[in-house]
Length: 210
Image 1 (cartoon, helix red, strand yellow):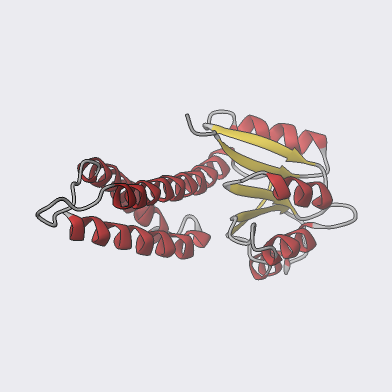
Image 2 (cartoon, rainbow, N blue to C red):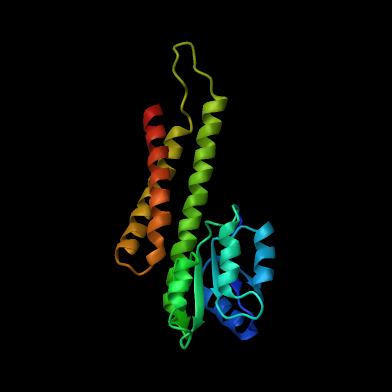
């Protein structure tokens, strides 16, 4: 049974963390709290996260500085970040957020349905990447374990199952592409392009063995 997907919530105010947890309660995710940028960076050292919801205004290390540290680390640079801040923030905050590597930027008070929908998209993207990695590992194990027979042909006991799983991922990918085209999640295009390439390479490998 795979571990449930984790989402990191970074905010110095307890009431904001409680509100975020309530919004995400209907999703199959494990929200984890960090009360500061320093706590967030510490959590990221040992735990895998699908997404980071990061408050901009925090005492000490603010959201922009925290994001800069996250993007400099090899282990964490590809984790999507959605910035959250109050509506009366400086007019350049959105620009600074995207410049810091955020995939999206929402102002408080935000629509819970909108935030939940955006989180669910990136969680699904993360889970698809994880399933794809597992399928690639299975394919490598299949190729390593099964030697060609006397005719020179390689048995392919797992290939139909791998193909079925990959078809399911391709179907989900098509739905995510539709979401990216409607512009509701601006930071989705880059990660989707990378995932599309990985799926295409795995499909080509399976087709070559079929």
